[in-house]
Picture 1 (cartoon, rainbow, N blue to C red):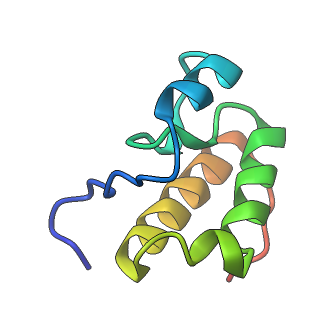
Picture 2 (tube, rainbow, N blue to C red):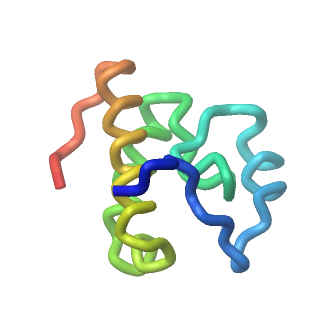
Length: 85
């Protein structure tokens, strides 16, 4: 696992789009403004999306684990039940 929990910047996304769409909210991937985790619905959606192979394939394995850990933490904080991976 990476010592620095920073996710790598992706060339295929524009972070400003995520911020424009969702506002100033916490994201499981704050570098690229992907996977908002500010509401129970967003937490469930983020978990669903990161567990799609095509979405996870856009990150290296360490970054996927960081994103999943952040989503799990948000789920616990908000009382959201998600299936483990």
